[in-house]
Amino acid sequence: MNMHLREYQKDTLTDTRQAFKNGFKRPLVVLPCGAGKTVLFAYMADRSQRKGKTVWFLVHRRELLDQTIKTFEKFDIPLKTIHIGMVATYANHPEHYPKPDFIIFDEAHFSMAATWQKLIDRFPDAYIVGLTATPCRLDGRPLGKIYDTMIVGISTHELIQQGYLSKYRYFAPSVADLSQLKRKGSDFDAEQSSELLMQRAVYGDVIESYRKYADGLQTICYCSSIKHSQAMAEEFQKSGINAVHFDGNTPKAERSQIVQDFRDKKIQVLCNVDLISVGFDVPDCWCCILLRPTMSTALAIQQAGRALRPQPGKTAIILDHVGNYTRHGLPDDPHEWSLDSKLKPMQQYNSDGTLSVRQCPECYFTFPSGPSVCPNCGTEITKTREEIKNIKKIHLEEVKKNRRQKAAEAVKNKSIEECHNLSEIMAWCKQNGRKPGYGYYVAKARGFIHSA
Image 1 (cartoon, helix red, strand yellow):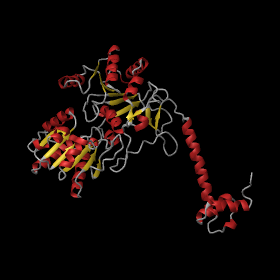
Image 2 (cartoon, one colour):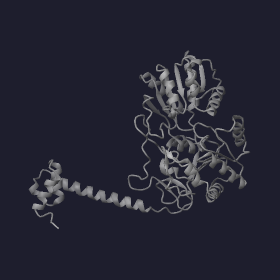
Image 3 (cartoon, helix red, strand yellow):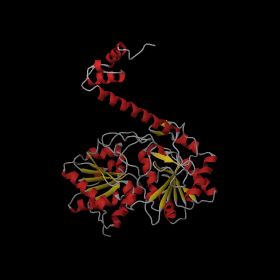
Image 4 (cartoon, one colour):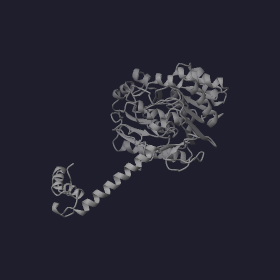
């Protein structure tokens, strides 16, 4: 099959080549989930192979390895000097393979791990490209120690607008009080999350939400632990919904069969922890249920993004029962990626004091702030107490700012003796490099400040 790149893929390829021409050796390429990173860099690997270069295309999971090989086979790309493999295998036994001229790392946000570092250190002269949808780590360490430039391609929002990803509807009905959830390391305590989410009432609420918003849709359910995932699958089954749990310990043949049965709609709900997140392609998924609270923006984006693979007439449903949107925003919200600093936390409020993401109190539809009624059910949206407080505070600051500006204008080119009140005296001090204490002394002497 001939490979026809989309325009945004061509642009990314051009930018990557230009980075090499500009002297960079390790660009990190950022493209959203579903943008076709593997296809794009299979193309680049093939072009390098034709120039006589030895290319390593490395992934970190068995499922990704099989998917990558299938991509090369689909486009009839011969594997003469291209070697597709697992990061761990090549790091532990690099002597078994020809020395690389060019290494492509898929899911490159894992690059700081020791195994990856071994490979990078062993081949300092090799050109490297890192591919990722989410160039950030949970521990906050930036990736600038490995990659020397960042190429940010098309956004998720643009991919949806152009029809390369599906539209979505996001609902966030709360099913458990997670306000007291503790951290374990950089993320929430998975065991505590499981305990809170494995209550009888929670199971009922989750299944009720599924029936209300996504009944009959092929669904991936992300849970907090294997025990939680197994229990959730069992609860779905008790309700007459064919659900299956699988994890990294499930034998490969059985896992492959489960995924195929899911594609064939023999299975309706796949329950897992994080097996179907990073790079795992299940295009038949129309709904994601989020039951794993996380501080990881990468994980939140990867999981919600599983439902956005396009299909004719599809509008994905995302059911966020753990409030991940409050920490990471909506799936197509923009992010300021950086190689040199940690990802900035999501701003909960806009500059005008209103919520950046709003939730309907009636149907739990979650959407960017703006409309005065819920886009899903038409319920009138009123401002929260905190928003009203924010708006008052901003208004007060604006009033104070205007007063300061007027005072500054009033004392321009005047002496302190010509000032008429405390505000003007303080403005004069600021303009003339005098300390506030001097201003208070003058104001008190002139009767503008009265002792209690």
